[in-house]
Structures are given as structure tokens and as C-alpha cells.
Amino acid sequence: MKTGTMNKNPLLKAFLLPGLPHLVLAADQNPGWKKIKACFSEVRKSIDLLNPDVLLVYSTYWPSILGHQVLTRPLSEWTHVDDQFHALGSIPYKIKGDELLGSLIVQKSKERGLYAKTVNYQGFPIDTGSVVVHELVNASAKRPMVVVSSNIYADRAETIVFGKAAVDALKEQGKTAVAIIVSSLSNRLHSEVVAPADDHIHSQKDHEWNLKFLEFLKEGRLEDVSQLSRQFHREARVHKVANFKPFWWLSAVMGQNNLYAGEILGYEPVCGTGAAVVGLTPAHKAAKDLEFDENDPDRYGGERNVIGGDEEEDAGSDAAFMSEEEVFGKAP
Image: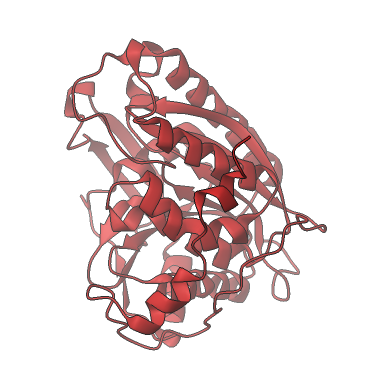
């Protein structure tokens, strides 16, 4: 536990990490997969230097429906087999948790108007992304890992409030953390069998949007990426709602601004998806570009008709959409 975290953001650094099982079980089958796996070693070294009390993980591979869930089991020991890529093999794991912090995140979430609950029982099926990240950056269970779910029906406001609840809990306990979002950029898997040696980003459009997001992240523009997430979802993702939320949560946890030093450690295709390893470190100087200005809620106000659409929410979100010319610049 570190001192002096009550009055400042306890988050030391953040990472975007991919979570497909190929990176653990089949990395040698493709040079790009091997490169991404090697990037995890750099992430592990960075975390060891910072020596946080806990790893705080938001995994898009763990979808929840009824509210938000937080893994609080002190030690989760099991053997994981991915339900889609089971032919690759199994991953035994021992994940150490932080029951007190996880329970407090749930409490703080409820205080901010959210429905949340703890998950603590033997044999709970921890998601592939969390297992992959754990095995590549924390396999020895050197520090506890608190994993939170990605609610598939949560809108931007609810996701932001959930992130702020995690910061509340860290501050109250005086703990420091490294935040990790487990997600790809573009998320279209190959619809036909593609040999590992022939792997590629699913489409050129996906690749171009991935590069634009990586450009923003390299400049430390986390809040701009958060505000553009809806448009990116429209342009470069299949309609898997949970997948475009992580930057909302991460911005709320780290601080909703562009005050970061970004580092792109790697970007390669993994089964058609855009697998990127990105680090964001709090900095004192913001990117030159201005941020967007969507609302910054502190408490969840209840159902916002996420499934059916809400005119007020839609009107606010449309302001964040840009034309491709505005994003990529005019064609020569």
C-alpha cells in the first residue's frame, strides 16, 4: 500500500492489451503473434518497475447483463479452455484476487446508483482475455488482480460512473493500481478458415481506423479516443456492444483528459482482429488537439433506454461523430 493516494489519482499507468488465446498457446505459428507476445514482456517489466498494489482489469471478454460484476475470490485456480478456440489447448491458471478492494468497488458502485455484485466461488469461468493477460504479465501471481465485467447494456454515463467507483475504492484503501483494458481495436474475426501464416486485418477499412486510433493514443489523447469510440464502433467493428466501452471506462479511471504520454508497443493482426499493445502514462502536458465535451456524470441516474435508443442521448452522441474527411484529412 502506498501513502498519499487519498488526494490524487492512484492509477500509475494504463495498458490496452489483446486477449485471444493464440498469444499464449500458439504464438510461434505466426511472426506477428510472436511479436505481440514479446510486447507483453515489456508490459510486465513496466508494471514491475511501478510496483502497484493491484492490477485493475476491465475485460470485454467478460460480458455481464444484469449490472456490473467484480471478481473478489482470493485465489481462483482452474484450467481454462476457450469456447471458440478450444482446439488450441488449455491454460491452467492461479489468479490471486483482492477481496476487500473488489467488495469496496461494488459498494462504491451502489453508492453511485449502479447495480453491482461480487463474484466469489470456486470454478467461476474466468474469461479468456483475463486469463491470457494474467498468464503473460502476472503468471506468478506476484500481485492481486481485480477483474471487472463489461455490461453489454451499459451506456456511456453508466460506464463512466462504474470507472469512478473503482477510483473511489482505491483512494479509500490507499492503494495504487495499473489499469488494464482487455480488448482488440477492430474486432472482426475471419469468417472463413485462414492459415496462421496468412493472418491479416479483416479489412482495409478496419486497418485504417485502427491506425487512426493508434495515432491518437500515441499522442496521449485518451479522452478524444473515448469520445470517438461510438464512431469507431460504427466504422470498424461488428455490432458487439461490449467491445467499444473500454475507453469510456479507462478515461473515467485514469482521468478524463488528454494528459498522457502514449507508447505503441505493438500492433498486429490476430485472427483478423487488430491486436495492439499500448501504454498510457499520466503526464503534465496535454496533446495540442482539443477534447470533445460530452457530459461527465458522477452518479448513474437510472435506465436510459439503451436498447430502444434515447433521443436526448442520441442527439448528444451525434455531436461526437466526424466525417472520414475530418478524421483522416482531405484526400490529396
